Image (cartoon, rainbow, N blue to C red):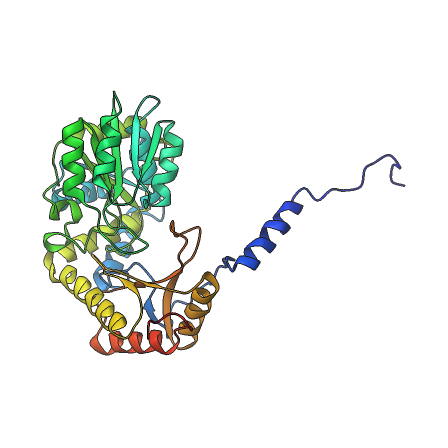
Amino acid sequence: MPDQHTPAPVDVFSWIDEAEQAREMAGLVRTLRPRPASSPLLDLASNDYLGLSRHPETVRGAREAAELWGTGATGSRLVTGTTELHAELERELAAFCGFEAALVLSSGYAANLAAVTALSDRGTLVVSDAGNHASIVDGCRLSRADTAVVPHSDPDSARKTLAAHEGRALLVTDSVFSVDGDAAPLAAHARACRAEGAALLVDDAHGLGVLGEGGRGALHAAGLAGAPGVVATLTLSKSLGSQGGAVLGPAKVIRHLVNTARTFIFDTGLAPAATGAALAALRLLEREPERADRARAVAAELYGRLTASGLTAARPDAAVVSVRAPSASAALRWAADCREAGLSVGCFRPPSVPDGISRLRLTARADLTGDEISRAVETILKTAPAGATDR
């Protein structure tokens, strides 16, 4: 018989029900949607900018690496998790992008956390663009540095903020912002950093494979690759069609990360299959540099045809085309209608968008055909909600 003095069970997670109801009312509920291995949908939602995630050479690179090295790295990079394959990828990645050295981590997110936290501490000023990716924001929080968020793509504000600080400073920005696909003013940021004695850290996740000569990235395009005081992070999961991340910069910066970056030291190394796939994709891009030009051309065509039909979209600087929706619920419905019509598109809503404006996010892939571009444009226009066009 239960003890009469035992208190009734309490639902300690009842607050989750209230939060869930609030999300539903705001049209901000997110759900997982497992996709099959083979989908009939035309894909404009993934970040496979160069169409390499299923390329035979990339797949073969993954398969051969797994057969040779096994399915997992078996430990952290400082224990058993560093293979000769990791070192090979780091050498070729650094050389391709124009940096002295590189360090491969398990994800682009981990790479940003590693770089921001290892290059700053208490007393350091980190100046962060208001449009930066969540991984940079989290890196700033974990760094325990003084963080100043400056207006989006405003090098004058960044320079004034740096000038007001005495001591070590770091300016951190995306190279291409994932929401609207606009490029950061990297040359102006670099001038501000040089003038104020600050380091520049650039997340080139959306620039690698799309910008710069042969897809060498936004820093290469800006003439900043390998420059003193400049460090880059990137992901292997977008243009290279694999998984993982990397930090590129001066050799002494990379040595410092090996000894201090917690997301490197305490994390299992990148799986051999992902490492092999990324290396194969990198070599393929070196042989076929026209893929970068094609990705930008597809983005420009999508933008031109959609805006000519009355939709509001941000002019793309790389491979991301962002189309504005009237509301969060309208964006969700629009994306669902596109999916029912055979087109997969991204849907960005708060809090993923810093300005609170919901959007469809389209990925311009280098392997899209002219017919597929036309089909995508027609589907987006046909399913556009009321208020999406200015006509």
